[in-house]
Length: 493
Image (cartoon, rainbow, N blue to C red; front, side):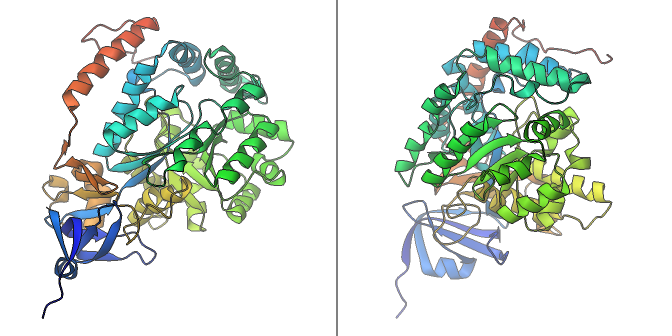
């Protein structure tokens, strides 16, 4: 007598299943059973799973790749309403003087909500199912609201945790570095809705951790400190204690450009990460955004302590900060470091597509080291999944397709020219189709994007609303944009 089949809520069948588990298991004809609670019940060969489970809903992947949802580890989600406005030849210091301060003193809560909403739609379409916001949404509730409406997993931080207005202005005193530092310092002091003192920062620090009371919540909290010289050691250690007590990630910008890295070196009297280690800040639950400029000694202590990096290769390339040439990310990854990926902001890499970031990471490392084998496609996928999950503090929940973990799943399609012929599924996926073949996206067991269409979301209506809000915001900022006009920059300086 045949054993009765167990019941699952959803079966995903007939896919090239890239599990990203410890053994890097791949099922060429794989399936996943998902329970009512949004967790994975079983992963395995399609025939075995089909024989074991019955479900009310079944998705046929038609032989296409299936992988864990990507984890975005560094992004500023509230800037989407003025994506692409910055001229290509604009120097970084002018971007802070001309745009950033005006933006934060003009943007409304509804603007932030629409911006994060657009960012979430973009991430889901590109196969990202979880993001950690960098702590720069002035009203974090707007980010939480938008993420909840889309159904994406989000890790939110408090806004602008800093207490040193002079932070960026310390250190390098020549050329563009000085101008950028001074502009960023002015940005700090001029933001009307951001903390100005340590007392104000401490009053806000940890407020988003309230979201962690529900173990099943899609939107959770972490501790974010802006960094880059804007936080005193006292505030940084308060933040570390807060993160430790709550068992969450502490996220901070670090060693982004040569200018701020040198400023920290002068401030501490030694390499920045060596100092942070000496005071007890450097730890496994700390994720450094960027970390483009590290010394040999810093690499050693980083590996020893197990802190994570959120590498944003496109952002560095966009602004010419040299992570592809001088960064140690590829080397650290090969030596066992946890290197995750981030997209930064809509004017720093201009899209929220981790397939692009992972591809650039692998290719840049190969080019820098003049070695085709230095990093391979599987490294890029691992950075965007397992490493990302650890960097945001959710490695026990997401990052691989295994029984007991949350069902955050991306299903591609083979009906793309880049996926034909399917000679090697991972090579086709990583080097040819990337996010273009994302077809269906599941978050916590719920289908969010089905065969290229959002479930229960009117995309066109949102885009129309965002366009209208963007024109209004830019006009209020003094950057006049007509309804159908496209801002242009001179092609030559």
